[in-house]
Every structure is written in C-alpha cells, then in structure tokens.
Amino acid sequence: MAILSSPIRDRGTVESKRRRSLVVEWLAHPQASFFLVLVPTLLLLGLGLLMVLSSSSVYAKQATGDSYYYMKRQLVFLVIGAVVAWVLAKAKVKQLRVLGWLFLVAALVMQLLTFTPMGVGKNGNTNWIEFGSPMLHFQPSELIKLALVVWGADVLDRKFKLLHKPKHLVFPFIFIAVVLIGLVVLQSDLGTGVILVGIMLSIMWCVGVRWKVLTAVIATMTVAVMTFIVTSPNRIGRILGFLSPDSDPYGSNHQPMKAIYALASGGWWGLGLGSSRQKWGGLVEAHTDYVLAILGEELGLVCVFVVLGLFIVLGYAGFRIAMRADDRFVRFTAAGLTSWLMIQTLVNVLVVFRLLPVIGVTLPFISYSGSALLSNMCAIALLLACARHEPAARNYVPETDEMETGKSFLAFAETGSQR
Image 1 (cartoon, one colour):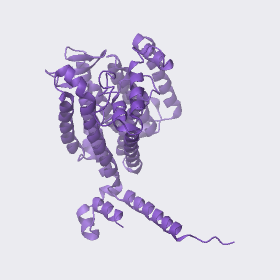
Image 2 (cartoon, one colour):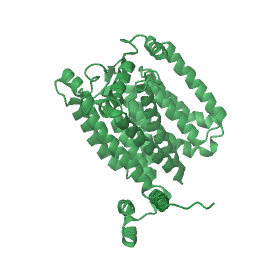
Image 3 (tube, rainbow, N blue to C red):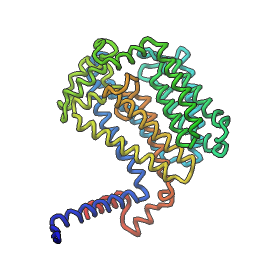
Image 4 (tube, rainbow, N blue to C red):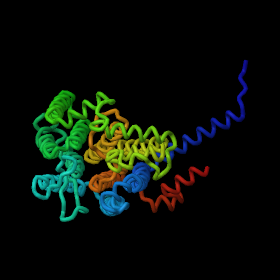
C-alpha cells in the first residue's frame, strides 16, 4: 500500500533542509571561525560584567563602602583588555612567535616578584604583586598560562621533527613548564598549578607526543599533586569534605553547600536579577569562584545552560581553527588556547555543581578577576589572530568579494536568514 505524503510534512522537510544548508553555507564562509570566536566572547563579557555588579555589590559595600567598587575595577580591566586584544588580534605569525618569548620572560620575572615584598597574599596564596596601590594588583600566574601556550607552541613547532627523542621534549618545554608551575605551587596556589598542568598536557597531546611519554608525565604530575595535597591539612579537609558532603557544614563544605542552595533556589528561571540571597554573606566567593551559582540563583538554570552553550561554541570554534590551520605554530597555539579556556571552564563548573573538590579557579569572562580577565581577553585576541590566518580567511579580500557578491560575512548571514 502506497503511503501518501503530507504537504505539511513535505514543506517541513524542505524547510529543515533549507535551514541546514544555510548553516553549512555560513560555516563555510572564510570569516566564520572569526565570528564564532568573537560573538560568544562578547556575550560572555557582557553577562560577566552584569553578574560581577550583581554578585559583588553587597560585599563591596561592606568591605569598601562602594557597592560599585568591584564592577568599576572589572570595567577598567575590560577596557584595557579590549585595547590590548585589538592590537593582538592584528598580529602576524612572526610577531606571535616573538610575543611568546616576551610573555615567558615577563611571566617568569613577575612570578619571582611574588617572593619579594611586592608579593601580596590572599586566602593563604601569595600569588599577587602590588604596584603601589590595592587597585593595582596583578596575578602573574595568569600571564604564565598565556606564555606557556604561545611560547610552547613556538618551541615545539621548531623542534617538531626531533620530538620523537624525549630529551628534545624535556628541554626546554617540560623543564621550563615545570619550573613555572613549581613557582606557582610554592606560593600555595595548587588550583592554578593544576590548570597549568592541564595546559601542558593538552599541548603535548595536540603536538602528538607518544602515549608512553605522555603517560609517564601524567603519572609524575599526579604524584606531585597528591604530595602537595597530603602535606596540607586545608587541602585534605577539602577532599574529605567532598567525599562526605554532609560533614563540616561551617568549614570545608560551607561554600559547596551554599552554591547548591543557590542553584536549587533559583530553579529553572531564577529569582530575578539582583535577587540572590546567598550573596548576602552565604557565599563568600560569590563574585569570583562561585559566580556561576549566583547566576543560576538569579537567572535560573536555563541561563546557566545558555552560558555553557556559549562556551561550547567557543570551544568548537577554537578547535576548528586549529584543525583548519596549515601552519603548525598556529595549530598548536589555537589548540593550546582553546584547551586552556575549556579546561578552566570545566573545572569551575564541576566545582560549583559539587562534582569536584573545591579548587580555586575562576570562570573565564564571568568571574571577577582583573588579571584573569586580561589574560582571557588576550587569549581570545590570539585566537582571532589565528582565525585570520586560516587558509581561506588569509586569501579572503572583503572589498573584492563585496563588489562581486554584494555581501560580507555579516551581510551574508543576514541575507541567508531572510531567504
């Protein structure tokens, strides 16, 4: 018996195919990767500034007398980061290679300054330096993340044909990376140290280091991390609190429990912007490590999923750039930068959802942290520079294409949506 097709069903099928073809067209455009990085980043930055204002206002009023103190400071770093990012996004490959070495030297010098009277402590960590004013704090370990990726990409690219010999991998990449990580961990910042280890391992994996070598490095780093954990009562307390969620509600489990309360009370749609209850002293780190919990409480789990979706798009775009690059340095840089942002995002989200023990790392673009915001924006700028060096984008001339077709990427997208 013949099955008669429905006109409505056929029309729906045609519409679905047309939409898919438009998406394929948009993704095939030479500038697609550039905008897949830029647009999610701008949305995350805007939402981040809004959440810093909302989540920090109570604490800022109590600590400084100015409810807008942390928002103003975040805005200053946002403006500085925008200027620096605009310059970096225009950089050429040769300039990026030089920048990697400059980042490395600057990061090493500044991290060493944390061991001098310029070093400033916070929550048991001494990983900040102060330039004459409390408003001018900087965290060198954030610059180390950037340096490790860009400098590492340059070194591993130059030594690529020799990497089958372990000594060429150990020196200088692994040696310098371990020195930098050690300087950070010696100042009691194991959370950032773990992120740096993740960045180092992800770069090695992207380069194609043999599994035997990679496994040996992972095992060594795991032993080192466990050693730092078992020698610190505070870190042991966090692990025990994670394993026993109902214990020590006013100690190691205080922040994780308050974060879950915030997410639970927010439900799907939230209590409304500015209506958080936990920011009134419940969550001490409401505007930094646990800003996602406040976002979920005020704007709901739907908004949390939107934020996670934006990070997924950003991750897709970064790895897309790496896979399309015809220059090894660009490929390693894009993969390293994307891995860094995705690893840090994943760790922060898992901590907030109480799927990992407490590790003090911020959520990129959303959390309050001037140094982290600046380094994250530099990472995005370098990703944009890498996107500009994709083969199709490199040969793309907007003026000529616009004269011939009457549309740039934005006009292209707008025309496609109106079809």
